[in-house]
Amino acid sequence: MQDDRSVPARRGRPRSFDLDAATAAALRALWAKGYEATTVEDLAAATGLSPSSLYAAFGSKHGVLQAALGRYDRDRDELLGPLEHGTAGLDDLRGFLDRIRRGVPEPGSPGCFMVNTATEVAPRDERIAEHAHRYRERVRDAVAAALRRAADHGELPDMAAEEILDRARLIQAALYGVQVAARSGATEEALATVAALERQIERWSVAPAAA
Image (cartoon, rainbow, N blue to C red):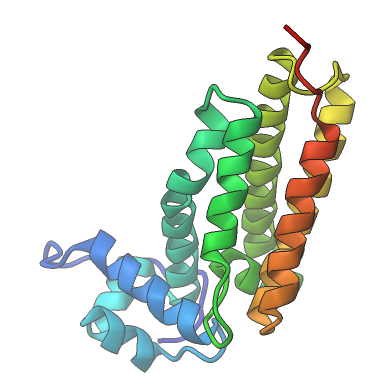
């Protein structure tokens, strides 16, 4: 299958396979080896589909990548949902960082699929760069939502919206660094950065008033 981004999906008989399951399998294959190193044969073996069925479902190898990124976005709902829609302020943020810590990969594991794809493909691919940008914005906005709730609850000093967004950007950038460090095998550095973020958030917090 050529990486022809303009190839339309072929028409034919209705699909006899689970597209979501095939996308999840393709995601795992791309995550394990990276986009460039993953061949069409790898994708066919991972999904159990023939190359022609891959064409019909995704249009191209690039289409497989775009579908895999979309699936990865949806899979992040469990991680980001409590920040986006929670009610607990700083506890939502603490829980998020704890999940990040527990999810820091061991040396040799593939790391964060979005970070990996952003560093490998986005510099020369506008559509993938835009997808990665939207994901970073989602993380930033989710963190900002938790910080805003914390300020509303009196857990943080009263701040202008711009300052809340600045702090969210700092956390988001540090988390990106966590994933890059972990991907390179620097697990201890990644964990130390998460711990540093936790300490910084506690420094920002307001001590509860005495009864």
